[in-house]
Image 1 (cartoon, rainbow, N blue to C red):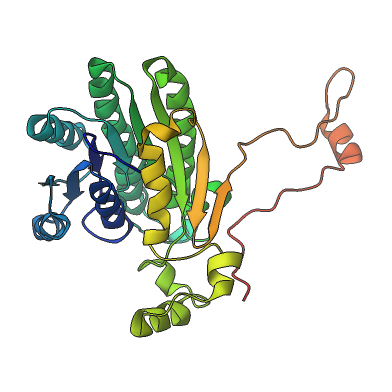
Image 2: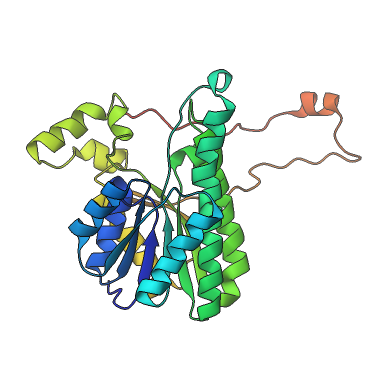
Length: 293
């Protein structure tokens, strides 16, 4: 996939999945703006990627940081074609132990940071009048919910909703907006007991992750996610927008949008007693399923 001539911003790209995204885009020919909150991490990432790469040390969330990222892309490379909103933090706690600060910190980086960066990028892309690609990074937690992640799951669910909304709003400008739902061996998934030993073993030996993880659980390396990112950043994805697409290991999946699953009607409306007497809806599952080897 050739991205020569395209300019991309990847937030939270100093390490992990974000770094893999930036490396893949650069390898495909794009000029890349790397971002992390830590200047030393940014410098190391830029040096490692090489080529037409520049770094911005900034905490994603506020408008000033978003505008700085876009201004750096335009000032250095003359334009902006691709935005990937990957920056994020975790403050996991069950509901009754989660503080205001835990909630606000995660929502500020994930949800507000996605909004401010996408807004700044959309303004620039519309001014250029040549289309663009906005790729928002979601999570299975945002699709299903996850124990101990009120803040993170809510933010990621909001990101999927923003992707659908912005796909509508930016369609006339030929700017596509999609949410990517990645599953990969990262520091976070390493802490899951069912995955940890296999991830550690693969890291120690250099052998691939076992087939049950790659196929059944759809969990692979960070590099396994980059093909979808590169595709969505390219001209080949012009007809794909407003979607939530999962990728990991050997698995590529299109998530269904929320829809009415079962419907009943009652003439004159539903009283509480009528609902209690007539309830026969098959209930939806919730939560990320436990891994099964």
